[in-house]
Every structure is written in structure tokens, then in C-alpha cells.
Image (cartoon, rainbow, N blue to C red; front, side, top):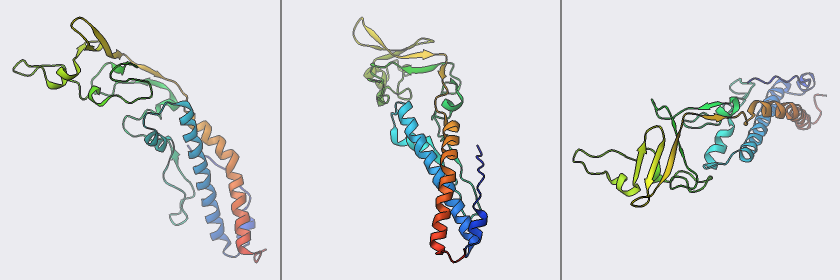
Length: 221
């Protein structure tokens, strides 16, 4: 996304001593401060809209600034974007769509049942021993059940889910298999970024102009 802002402080700043340099640094500062405002707003929005099981990680990824605007590198722009770490679904909530299985070749998503042994409550992460990568349902070559199977007492029903034996004649579901999961467009990253840029960039640029004049002590006016 590219946000263009029309400012009218060039003529004023260039009249100051070292005016072109002051203009460059003032513009870069205004751009970076606006980018940080977008970042802060997006982090607050993610906290309001989502239940965060890894808050530190998710909030860092909610709005990543890279690169920043830089005078030395001749870069008069900053890029703010949603993180795209493996397994992170934030960007999918911007465009909407369907959540696909993470396992290559899988046709269904394994969703942990809230209140079950894998996910005791909605805000909790999946219990380590019940993670899909830890569960085993087959037998060894000697016919003995694997240690993980004995400990969790789990078994898989194709196209239905994963169950746990809780007694000689009782069982409960741990994961259910879902063909797909709908992801709504609730992040609103572009909308928020445009709103913050429209609201704050001009003010940040004006503040940088005032600071440049103050540092110049009126010598160039």
C-alpha cells in the first residue's frame, strides 16, 4: 500500500540555513512517526478484535515497520505491513477467505474442542502432549502401542475426529475434523492505515517545520 500526502512546507524550510537537509530530515521524521502511529493503532485493534494466545508474538506481527524512511539511504517512505510468519493468520483476516489445513496433503482441519484435554479453555494454547505433532495412533512392528498412545489414550476416526478413551466404555472427542473454516475481514489494516495517515501526517510535518525554524533561530527568515 502506498499513501501519498501533499504538503506545502518545502519553500519555507529551504529558506533556512541548511534548508534542504532540514527538509529531508523533517520529512523522514514525519513519515516514521506516522508509521509508528499506524503500528500502535493496529496493535490496539488486534487486542480488541482477537483472543491472543501468544500476545507478545502476535502484537509484534500486527504491524511490522520495515524499512523505515531514511535520509542516509535516500528512502522517503516507510513500509508498514502485517507480519507473514509461518502459521500466522492475521493477513488472512484482512482479505477474508478460508483457512486451509496446515499439513501438506491434508483435506480437513483438526480443530481442538474447547473444554477438552487439548484446549481446556478458549484463550489457552493447545496442551503440549495433545499437539497434533505429538499424537500417534499406529502400532509398532511388534504390535505394541506407542508410549504416546498409552499416555493420551487417543484414537482417530477418519473424516470425523480424534477421540480419547476415558473409561472401559466411555470416550470423548478431542479434535473434530472440519473441511474448512471461514475467516472474516475483520483486521481492517488498510482502512486503519489510511485513516491514521490522513489524520496525523500533516500534523507531524507541521511540527517538524516548527522544530526546524526553532533550531534555525530565525536566521534564514
